[in-house]
Image 1 (cartoon, rainbow, N blue to C red):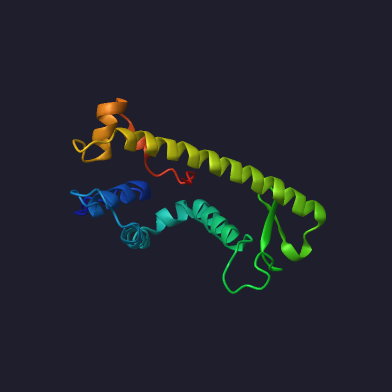
Image 2: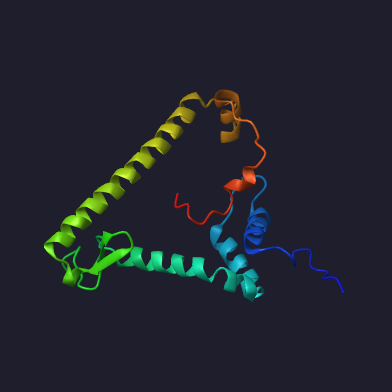
Length: 173
C-alpha cells in the first residue's frame, strides 16, 4: 500500500527546504530559524535512518560548537578574562591544547592562527559591507526590495540551478 504522506520519500535536505518554504512569510520574506529547527527536529525524530546517515555531520557540528564554546573569549564574570585552564586554544588544523598546558610556542601558533582567521573575517566583512554600500547608494523610493535594486542596477537574472545554494553545511557565512 502506498504512503499517503506526500513527504514520505524526502531526505533531510529536502525536508529542510520544504519546512523553510512552509514557514516563510510570503509577504515579508522572513523566517524564524528557531521554528524551522523545531520542525526539522520533529521530522528527524520520525526518520531515524536520516539521523544515522547524518551522524558524521552531526558529530562534526557538535565538535565545532564545543570548540567555539571552549575558545578563549571575553566573558562576563570570569576570572582574569581570557584565561581559564580548561579552555582550548588552536595550535594547528583540528589540534587544540588546554590553556593550562600551553607552551610559549603554542601561544605563538595561536596568535598566527587567530591573525589569519581575523584577516579572513575582515576581508569577508569588507566584501559584504561594500556590497551593502553599493546597493544602498543607488536604492531609491521606486525600489521596495533588494531584488528590485539587483535587477535594475546590477543585472540580476534568475538562474537555473539556484537550488545549489541550499543546505551546504560547510558554509559558515
